[in-house]
Image 1 (cartoon, helix red, strand yellow):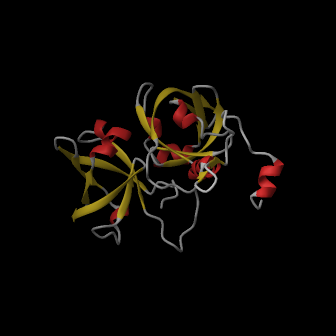
Image 2: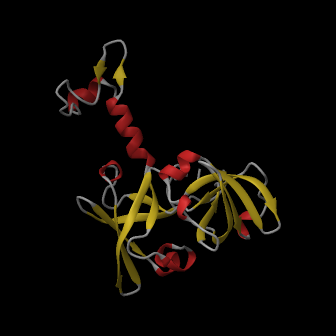
Length: 224
């Protein structure tokens, strides 16, 4: 598990591409402290397993599914990446619950400065937007951010100077692709409400015609 608080930015040293997968090697410093082979490091928000460590570099395998769902396949030698080690049990929880399992990607639409902050607007599909709520959390390239604006096909975040200096986000340009991970709580709620009881063959979250069944009677009946 991660928090979305980036520890440092690293640099891609190489990417060895296979037929459907790849091996990425990244130059880093802080995230390698006390890191061992088999540990997890989030690279632009994608949880990868460290397979080798050599000096100030580490390598990790990227499987085909990860290449399909994320922007890692677009990286090249010299690309800067956001890095975060898995959270320690006794560590501070500064961001929000981030699994490192990307839901999909978005496209940077625009960046607009407002005093000391920069507004970043991102477009994405409905399969991701349906989980986004205003003032809720989202991970963009592994960065825990608060949703400040939301429309039918875009959302926007306001980036403070510290975040801009410690991450790669403001190095992006309009048209660039970013990795997105929704707040996991919304996905669990959706799953719970749509789960079918095998004994009654009943959809708890919806009626037969698809309308919502979340009523006070429903909540009382199910122990809430």
